[in-house]
Image (cartoon, rainbow, N blue to C red; front, side, top):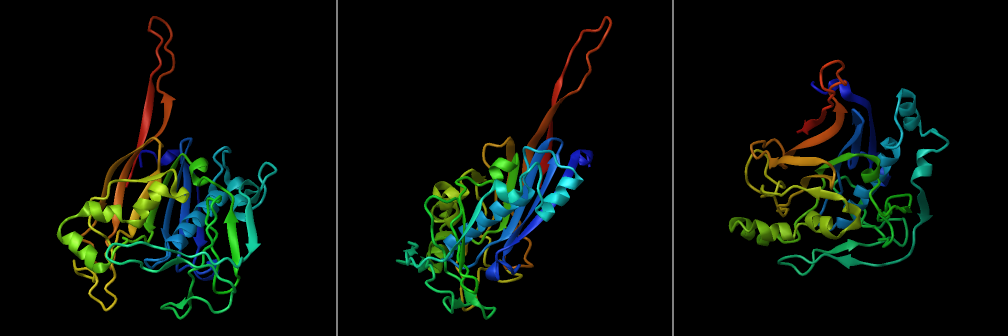
Length: 335
């Protein structure tokens, strides 16, 4: 409430990444706002499932980042209500549309067949990580919804976003030419969280053994997202706090026991919070709510302290009093 009067320009945008990039079973939501003259963007997402879908998750992370920055990000311009309406409609501002700002290139599917695999602990390979389609008919495995699971992603070495091909209908590849996540340029503070669905590169037996021995360091060293934060351009500019809690997925509902179903899914840190590196933000805490057992996930939460600006407190005093000017920093704690 103390800073409520400073909050302006609240806007939001949803990005579906499910079937044909139109269904909302997977996707993300971005909320942007200003606190004084400082811009914030909060994103949450549910990315593609399954251990071998690293490239698809990274492509969705990039796609959501691009679209949210495209729709909500005008760092260099102040927004008024008319501007916000214009952004929602995709209309022009200052002679430019949002599409002009980030060029999106749509091209037809290629017939390349490059395939990569994931090296894992306790298993030579989990399986194909990326298998581009040569047609848009019936490729892919059947998922629980009766549809086809896409394993289609054609990596692009020069692109920020790894283009992702939809296996179910359109067969198009969407390529973004950005080498840097545009959210980092558009907003002063960026917070990315949710069920990002990244897994540990290991078998269930190996993870169980390492958890029993409290070898947290080995598990983190083989965590997919931790590796991507170090080496993948898609995540350049984002950091995460130190993960000190146990894997948050997959639990038997109502119990503190990892998946005992026939699938026996490998415990993993699927639920994560990332934030913009080098911004004036301090992470106060990063924890998991182990006592919340209503889901097969354990929720995570974090608190941050953000600097939101400096302003002059005192006007120069006249007469016999000494002229002075004090500056004060405002802070905002986000939980």
